[in-house]
Length: 93
Image (tube, rainbow, N blue to C red; front, side, top):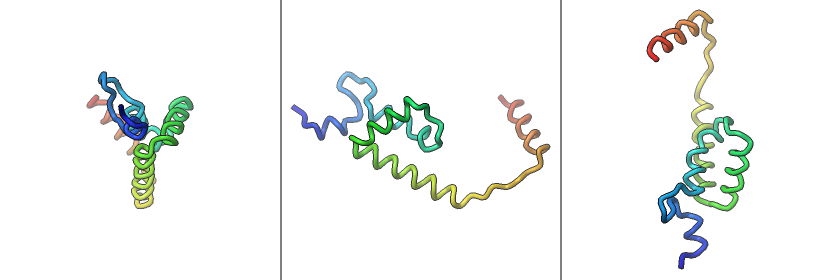
């Protein structure tokens, strides 16, 4: 019989289905980028309150994003350049 500790940290279920930790892992980027739905955010927050491993992963991602964004500068480019880049991207898709 597995302990509660083992159950919380188990990444894949015995039948091969996605676990809550897997779902949280997939949601992590959406959460960090503020692109998650309210339902996804609610699930995520509930899970990381109970799962130390997922909470730590979330904290690491937030720290990394903060470090990267702190070193980037926004450059204002002419609108024509932005439109030309978008058109080029559309040609390749």
